[in-house]
Length: 466
Ligand code: 4AD
Image (cartoon, rainbow, N blue to C red; front, side, top):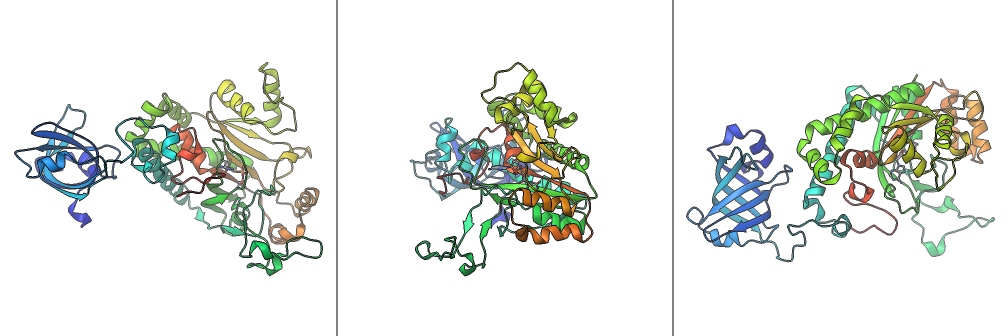
């Protein structure tokens, strides 16, 4: 059946081929205006951001009255002539000769032709993909995912699938969702009163992954350059605009590569993805620029054409302290940068993306390579205006003795990391990697300010509907 119908995208892109011919399209009515003997229907078929205008006239269409009265969101099959309308709002329209109703919508359809708030649209996640904003966001999301795979595949990276169920906590932050098949009322405990996971499904504690990094490291030490791209989960109970409980992360891991190589890779990838989306979704990007974030395109063009700043954490702290700005949280060496500090750096001082490097060891994970000073580690976060941190990465500690020291210092159990330590025993290599938050880069590219509005079905505390 589907082959009978051309897509609106094809008709727009190859209009010369079809003008003057009879064509068939199928889609949903976005708006409808009818007078006594003719009318206009804006039809969206899902293939393209723009609608196709369908002209209906009483003398050409047998069921003109019925079609003219259809409520918004009704689905119809249309046959008619494609007519060039150069100079009008849209370059082509279809003069209908036959319209069949597939599914008449109920007139209570909530997405009427007015602007709805994003908060309201979140309550109807089953219908919001049909709105202009979400049609644009989710198509950009799809294209960006493709661009990421293309970027890595073109560079001969191996796509490594890391497990979703795992026994280890990569970040050591204890923000994991636990998986169990045990009935809550009869969870067995050990003599010390701790949960006895040996009786559970996997015979040990199992969680949803917070990061595929440790698995990516295993693969990188065999394949040299790899990347993961999949869902990750964090049980952070934070109600911010930038945190979700389920989000997608891209985690490349590269061997014989230090932090400089790592930053270069992150910068190249981000520029590539932005350029790809601007080139392949011009209508959607124009929409964001006009209705969501004025100046977005200019900013993204600048990002693609400029070099990202690299700034050691110690220097960042000095700049913030010397800025004279009064922050809610004071800036002290040794503390993590707060959102307000990150925003000040990128939005007031640099007005561009900034890599902050070499953070104090105590605020970073156990696996990062210790610097000569014994106080900082070879870490990098990429901060961008408007969103804050979109990338977190590091050069990994490749020395077995130093790694063991850190594991013990941080109170982790070395038995849990025996395989990770063995990677350092059997042909260790300088290696580095990072995690890019997929939703965060989508927010950055679209100007959408809430992470709930770049995920089709967001998972946040108290929200697992749909
Ligand atoms: O900085 P993070 O925690 O780094 C890691 O997980 C490393 N293991 C990555 C690696 O080196 N392979 O997270 C990386 C990125 C953040 O910069 C942010 O963009 C995103 O993941 N992120 C989140 N995105 C949405 N919701 C959350 N709750 C997020 N937590 C992290």
